Structure formats: C-alpha cells, structure tokens
Length: 333
Figure 1: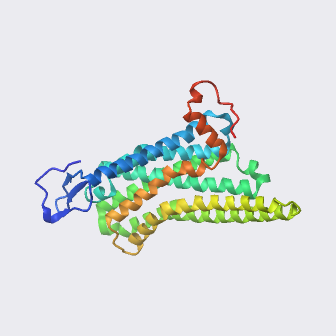
Figure 2: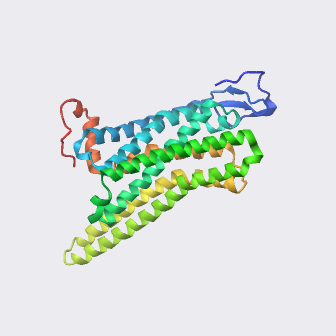
C-alpha cells in the first residue's frame, strides 16, 4: 500500500521496518520491498500455509472418520476452525497491514485486521480453556465424565466461546472509536475497558488452565503411585509406571509451555504499556503479536498429533485413501 503526496522526507522517516518507509509527520507510506522483506514474507507465508494445512487435516479427520465423532473432538473441531481462519485471514492481513503500519497509518482495513485478530485469538484461547476443563473431568472424575461433559454441554461451550470472542472484539473496537473522538476526556473509561477485556480473555483463562493442568498432573501422579503399590510384585511395574508418569508430565509441560511461550510475552508487554506507562517499541509489539499467532500453527501438533488415532487418520488422508473408497468406518489405532 503506497501513500500519496510529496516524496518522503528522509529526516522524518521511520526506517526500521524492512517492508516500507513511513513519514511520521505526514503519515505517508512508501513500499520498500528489500531482500529482508522478501524473506520475511516467504517465512510468514510458510507459517500461514502450515497453519491452514495442519488445521485442515484435523477438521477433515474429525468430520470424515466416525470414530472421531465424539463431544470432546467437537471442541477440537471448533478450535481447528478458528485456527484455520487465523491462517486464512489474520496471518495474510497481518503481513499486509502489520501493527507497525497501522500504528502510523490506521484505516478501515487496519480495524478489520485488529477485530479479526482479537476475535479469532480469543476463540482459540477460550477453546484451550474448555479443552482443559474436558481433560480435568476425563482424568480426575472419570465416573462423572459422561454426565458432566456431553454433547449438550459441548455445544454450550462452543457457542459461548464464539459469542464471547465477538463481544470482546466489538467492545474493544467501540472503545477505540470512542477514544479517537474524545481523547483525554474518556481515557480512563477506555483504559478500564481494555483492562477488563484482557483480564477476561487472557489472564483469567490462563489462571484456570494452569490450575486445572496442575490438578490433573497431581491426580495422574497419585494414580501412578497407587498403581505402582498395587503391582509392586511385578518386576516391570515400576518401569511402566515411571514411563506413563513421565509421559503425562511431558505432555502437560508441552501443552502449557508452548501456550505460555506464545502468549505470555505479548500480554506482559501489553500490560506494561497499558498500566506501567512503559514505552514499548512498535517493532517489539509487532513481533510478540506474530508470536501469539504462531500458536494457531502449533495447536494441531499439540492437541492432535499426541493421539495415535489422529495420526492414523492423517496417514489415510495424506495417502489419498479416503478418495479411493469409503474409509469412514475405519478402526483408527
């Protein structure tokens, strides 16, 4: 997107971004596709492609194979749809209308980019929270699992998640429009709206997820020790128990570690800027924003590739078997 007007004045140009120059006085933009910019676009396009392909595999697997038609997998399906839309819409829009560009040259497309970003990222976050609740009942209260987590409850979770995400995005958009009109006169109201919004869509879900996964880990370890004591007479029992315990620990560590690695830096940066009056460079803010979007690429690997039946489904899809006959009733292992 090239800006009009007079040639860019070099004394007022922001040269940090590799893809364009911005005149911070007249807010004109000039495309400068450097070699670094081209490499950056290739990398980000690859991330977008992997995100789309990975989530398409999850969606196709759950829709096609009847064995995967469970209430729990409905959550994964909805999460994969949200992450697929991140790869199709948010990532390409962010490449063309980055946070750096929109900071200086905000227009309608920048607002659309931001609204889609907030909506789909919030949907993804809240789905991860719902999946953690599902896992809690599956591991910690298995006898009550089918009663507590059924098709009706899953539908309510999915609808509530999408509606909440849309409301948050609309609320933040309205708050931004109000701030543009009244500036300092409504600063604290807009600040409060942003604080409450990010508390409910990030910090509260994070606290819930961390608490739930810690509880799951403790229960899994307790069950492993109980199994070890029951079968202490068998020579290989301890080895199998330690292996199972270690696998559960690694899985939960990967789930929470990747999630926090992708999201925590951005929200800590945002909180520092919003509440601590810290001046965060736009380039840093933009990099951390991209890091959060990478979580949509990693979700299929984390929440699907750990399960053998998904791996079996992926192999059948990638081999083209589903186009050669009816494999919908295949027994996935």
